[in-house]
Image 1 (cartoon, rainbow, N blue to C red):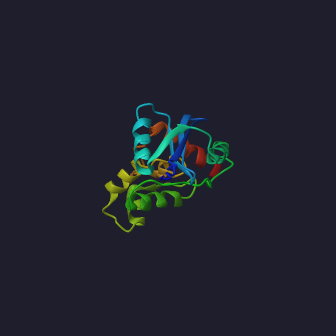
Image 2 (image 1 turned 90 degrees about the horizontal axis):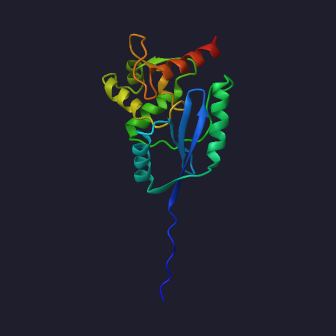
Image 3 (image 1 turned 135 degrees about the vertical axis):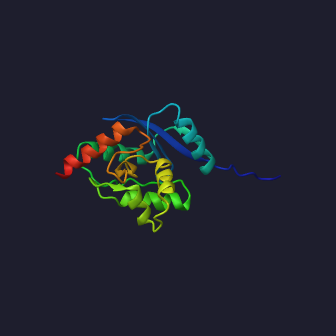
Length: 178
């Protein structure tokens, strides 16, 4: 008689969090947060499909220890009591995208850089559009702070959550730095 072992499939837990900017949708594996986005019923299914395929995991609304840390740190951020997030992350992207996102994480709180400067920081000044595209595909809003990247002319440009949210976040950070 053959013995079969059950294959334990990975789980991606999801939750909805309330913030001063409205609801945010989060997903986490056992290793860390893999999605934090402004709640958008049209975009979330596509993002979850990407996660499900990458991790070969079941997705369900469930508690995950990382959500407790995430909620605490987001509350502190919006109360101007946190400048650096420490919640574990699990970045999902190409090697190039992850390199771009690491630059985002290195932008000091309350500061901004241009897409051109970001491209220079990855030693590829001609990759401005590719950098902007990588930023647009960032699945972890706020913590991987693509809101800190602005146009070369100093103007606010694209943000998945909308320009008004980007402006709010930059003003929140600048107020704390004054």
